[in-house]
Amino acid sequence: MSEENLHRQETQHAFLVAWGWFAQHIGLIQAIHNVPLHQKTYKHSPHTKILEFLVALLGGLPYLQDISRAAHPLDQDQTVAQAWQQPAWADYSGVSRTLSTLSMEEVQALVRAVEQVEQPLIDAELARLRQQGERIVYDGDLTGLQVSPGSHTYPNAAFGYMDDEIRLGYQAAVVSLQSPIYRRLWLSGQAHPGDTVSCTQAEALVLAAEARTGLRPRRRTEWLKKRIEAFEQTMKITEQRLTTQTEAVRRAQERLEVACQQRDERQRRLAELEALYHQRQRHERPNSQLSQARQRLRAAEHRVQSRQQALQVAERRLAKTQALHQAQQAEYQRLQARLQRFEQDNQTNLAPIAAEFRLDAGFGTYENIALLIEMGYEVYTKAHNARLNASLRRRSDLPSTWERVGTNAEMVAWPDLPLTRCPYPLDVGLERFHHGEKIEYSVLLHFGDDPVTENLPQWFEHYNGRQIIEAGIKESKWVFFLHHFKVRTQAAIYLQERLTLFAANFIRWAARWLDEQADPQVNTLNLRQIGLKRQVQVGAHVSAQVIESAQGKMLRFSACSAFSGRVLALRPGASP
Image 1: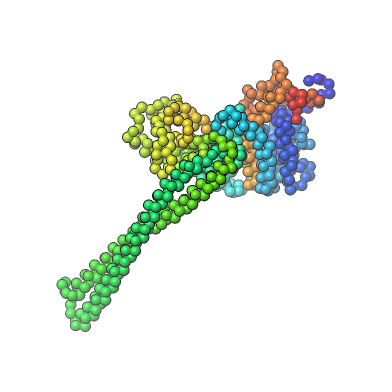
Image 2: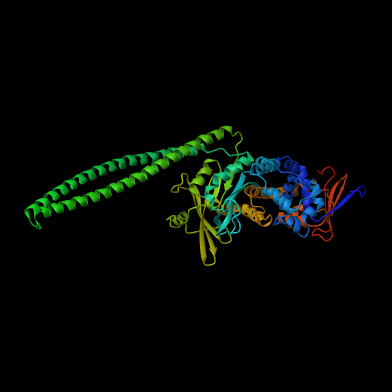
């Protein structure tokens, strides 16, 4: 780069400058500015403060006040502001006020704008996967975001199970895409009250992934039809039982009425005899007519009580069957509606994909597994119900030899195993983990074309590949500090969550773009060797000289920085 006509600036946030260049390249800044925000502009526009909030997330600032009170305040770095095409940054208090007054409609518009910017990048990765003939792999999870247990200012926060304890906060439902280039890309995230449980969110995760990608597999309507046919037979049995039990109740009522009539007659007879004996001043003797009448009345009363109990038992059985019948009718209607919806999905799905979902045990109910099967996915999960674990260990065909699949893990498996209350047979793997003298068991479940029972180590490894989303959750909490809510309105909390997931994607895309556009020099910084955590915690907070000219842009890292002696220069024409 020629030394003539150079414009030099200093920054304490080098990577934030480079990321500003990438934001210009993908049109992010303009997209944010195009969103109507109904707030007045005094010194700084609300759009500037929204962008400043995003930059603070990219910089991994734990708290909003760090914008102004960190060792090197972001709001004092004019070079970063210019890289993001802003005249200047606002004090953190102004950012806080803007976030607190955003309406949910405005936040949703901002999120849509951000998603529109990143959609081409996600689509490009999906197209690459399909061109390579690879299956699209989604991972879903629900993670707790706790707040102070004594707080009353977080909207819709609730106590729930988080990090092995009952805590106050939220549950974030997230979906990621496994990427051969970027390893993990976030597709969606939605905050729920803290008492939300995983098993209620499986369908929502799948639908969120399909809505984001615009892709879905062919629905397995033929499987669903067979399920409905089998369910119809079950309903017929229930209807027959309902008819039988209705007749049983009718007979019990008749028998009770006869018993009551007999009791009433004997009560009248006893009353007549008592009056007669009293009139004639006769004493009741053990074998007298009065004594026998009294005994017959007691027998009649016992008979009434017995038949009342029989009627109650019959009515309880009938009520239970009626409730079952109503539930089955509702389930039948739900399955029929699902079949109709899935048939329409197949008619409009001109390019179905091969896709799989990996979920943990919290999602692994039989109904959730059946739903994902019918939606066309290859399913990898763990058993939700611990009783299956115990029943497998008691099976007579439990192999005596276990296959080692990990350092301390062994497995045995059964292909296409019918399970009670599961409408479809599943591949079932029983895992055994050795922790010293302690042994723990868990159950892997699979449905699909992969012959998982023929290669147990590969099954074990592939399912545990979903640790990539667990690593992403830790990244969002401990690199971007998602669990430190910077605001306390529902709209702003949602914005923070969505922008945090976007930030993780953004940095991965930016690193690849900067590496591709870099002007190769001997001392060029190799971004491929710098992980996201180091980019955020180190690269976003190192000092550098920003050099601009007609030939391009360059970051020359200062001698006192972690990247001393390195440069990052964009090739001519690559600058945004």
